Length: 224
Ligand code: DC
Image 1 (cartoon, rainbow, N blue to C red):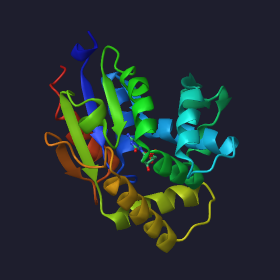
Image 2: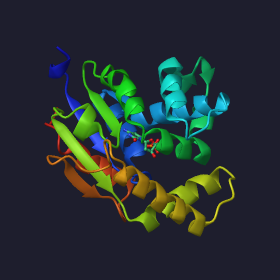
Image 3: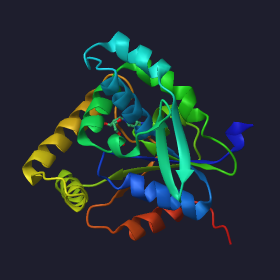
């Protein structure tokens, strides 16, 4: 029974550190990992390849059903295959993020991706990272975390990441984008970004990744 497989949900806005924290926690526990944002990004990328209009909801819903999304471990790295093509790097771009955010507001797209996300629940356990993991996809999860951080700190983290990659951006531009994406994700009618009532909230402003990982792991039963 999949309901018996333990799930830890880690939700929060972009830049809250949930991707890095979720991956580390999953690795420490030896559990599977679901990067649910990658599914929305994958549909965004596929829609871009097909030159679809981001305002054409019906076409985007069709695109969601038609897009195959695979996760593959290659050389110790998780690669994402969209329609059979390795799209890992393209998925991380601002364009893919913006497309994902727009697509994620369409109820039928969210519904179409529900079962694909739930299929990740396999023994010995799952760490699910996203916006609605604890509220909609795994409401019965035994462990729920909601990570936050100030918008300024999130913009700064993103700025450093992009600078390391040689992408030129401004702090002001990033902060504006983050605030706009927050507003879109929090105000959409379906599955808006909000903590589950039973989620433990951790503000990561000023905290290092290891400190957050330790706080999250402390919520689970000791394994020694
Ligand atoms: O976590 P991320 O930045 O990869 O997510 C990209 C977009 O996808 C984000 O703007 C909101 C959307 N998303 C969502 O609506 N629900 C999820 N569970 C994960 C992501």
